[in-house]
Image (cartoon, rainbow, N blue to C red; front, side, top):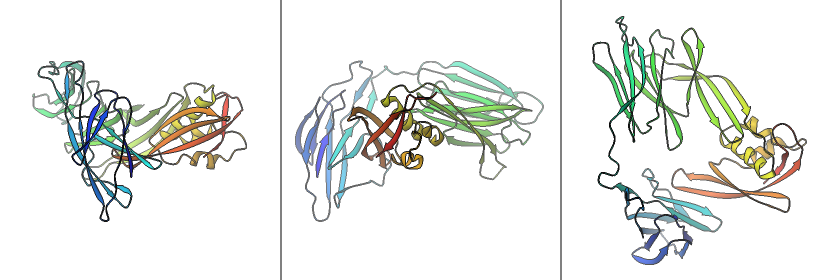
Length: 354
């Protein structure tokens, strides 16, 4: 099997495989081959950084990981991927991407004192007195504290986002207010709901805020945006003590943020709409008379993409699909045919993809 160790364009690497030094990875990939035995093969890949962080705030650490090959395929490990090693199947070659674990330099990333961010009040324990919800921020984290009128701490949490937001609303319509916490981690939105009735803290991802609809009620928003489109899906939340939560879809709201003026922008608008699950938006960029179902299905399921050049009147692109999330993916080239059919959302339309 053919492999390429890809440069990280930051720290570089001295690479060893199964104890044998292969060379240095700086600006160009490092190729090597590995023969598979009759019962499979294991590769011990070791990467050592060539330079330190220029800011002096962190130190990259050498690491080693085992990659197993069986029947010409990469075997997905049983453990949760840590993100230090990422393998991509590209044609007949497997590209190996690496990211070093890091430790903070002594005193470089000391957390600052917390400063107040948000204050809300509500009666969570039905004693007729107002309790408080307070958030604080530091240079590294966000802090949440819910305190009763007597000073007792009802809830205390730390979040990796120092811009966290809270909303206090009776989201499950049980007569008691709940605390909803919204934050992001690695660009993924998350939500916690704290229900005082049974002191339950439940986590969800993908939800970004609430829409107050009057009479103390609210819907939960799930907002997704691209450079060209915005889609907001509204859900009604229901949960009784001891039961699993239910999100009932209410409606979707969508709008176009900007017009796609070039063929590449049209393909990007099309793919980015599919990426966020906006199939209706993707169809806006499909040409009249084209098979909408076939065009929108052509990219398949993917988590990322790259737009290439125009060749022979066609826009080239690559979509990336997880084979094992966070560890092993594959790339698939696509070619898009377009026709000039100007309207409010784009100058060009996709007529064929594959």
